[in-house]
Length: 393
Image 1 (cartoon, rainbow, N blue to C red):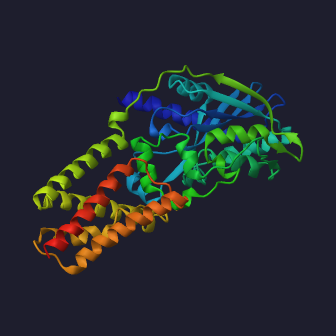
Image 2 (cartoon, helix red, strand yellow):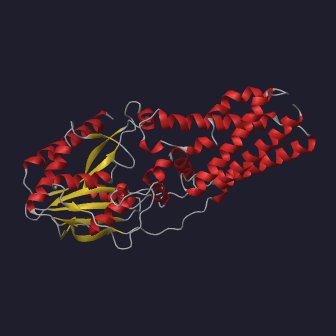
Image 3 (cartoon, rainbow, N blue to C red):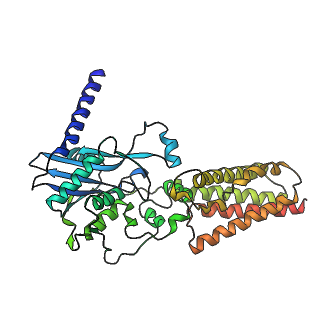
């Protein structure tokens, strides 16, 4: 094991030496710099694709990829920093053969756009990346929408080329909201889609500008393709498909989807409510479960909004159904006779659900589709509780 570790250390040292000393080299006339775009993968963390800069110079025997968005699971407080929005990502480098081979092994399409740069522009971009790869410059504070693996490609290219790139809207381009752009890549009726819609607030329901679309690798490819540099010259001189994925049938997991699962739970709530109505009784276990669940979710949503640096979790109106105060009124559910204020509180919860519906209809915030059956069940249960308490007060 020690011998293997020594070999690995030597390889890493050698790679660092090669890459860090590359800054002393001048690219030859044959050098090419291109942008690689990787199609989405099968898991949630790969659902949006990836980008990288490829530096290829046969004269100097250089063929490497710089890519942003590298993270270390073993970093101290990784998960806590991720939740708080304080996680540092960094620029990574690989030999092109290894980088491309990795994504081929995952059966993901790889496209390459060779940039139409002058020799000076190539050198400037190359030196910018080399400098960015220095240990003191590697890390940056990650933001899903504004500072990720895709936006870095756009920003680094433009900065290193003296902001001479103009990103033109493609023919027929129609701007979408940030949430719509996410839904293009993540099925709304998946647990990943449900979690995203639950955690991210109404701030992502605004229309994204053309450049803001480039938080997704797909739009890096689209807008680089139509971009110009130095007023009128096309930014991309050649586009290649390095690997075309083999299409495979997608599995249908509806019976484990949020809509189905919450549909079954909602049916259970409605059945219990029906039998409670018939017997003029109240199933305390159900009401405690509902208030505990909505209260805990509400606290989490509130913390994501107010206690983190995530820009996308602000103004989250899921709080209209996941009401954090529900935790603090659970004690009333154990009483045979409740206070009058608690009946008013239940009416308030119904008003909140009506407001949520209005927000959804007019597009202030688009909520998780899996919530539809459970919100209907909550609404009916709250109505029953009001009727029950008013009869037995």
